[in-house]
Length: 269
Image 1 (cartoon, rainbow, N blue to C red):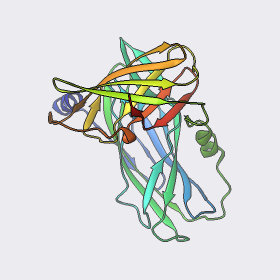
Image 2: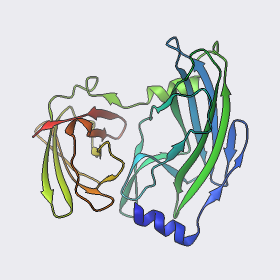
Image 3: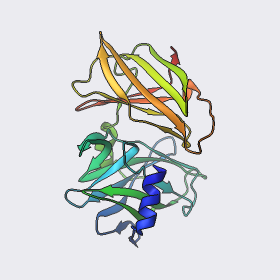
Image 4: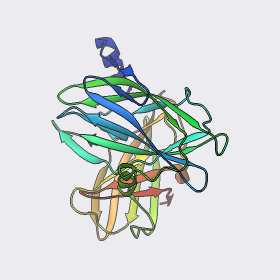
């Protein structure tokens, strides 16, 4: 990932989008905030929608072999405590022997927003750094902002549909025991996972996240054996230093051809 970003910097690639009250646009992607509605518990449900130029794609939070994970800066917001992104199920994108994970055309990211002061109006402002790719990859920056003050608004069907596209939980998918075996290698750790779960269909892929953005995880080799999903990968610290991994923080997303399962944590194997 670091090598990819350094290459973009050396080439001087980048696009800066114009800023508007609710939407921003570059030559390759248009972004807008869907104002959403206020939930009964005081949180606000909004959406961040990206519309990509034909043939272009963007990336999920764990982008695969060579993708660019999106970065969100909410510091320009007001009356904001936290923002949680409810990621819809992405798809595997295979091109030139490389597998990346993301979205094409139009994608809506539901946002679960906690205000600093319940009942008050929220000003949501985001600076977004993201990668968009076709035959080449280009880093793009967009800025969007929107007032979220309508507490009586009805649920937005676009956001509701995106929420319905989230991966199944482990319980919903009937996942049984999940184990992770960690062993040292020369420059990191090898992780071997065994997941007892029903098949999602051909082409299953287990995607791992460590809970620490400084730990890079290689794409996994995923196979099926007697009702168990077996996945193996390696973990490396981006600064080249030694590190430890908390198994309870390991997040495994199993992607199938039409669905996905989100698994949090694993036991020692």
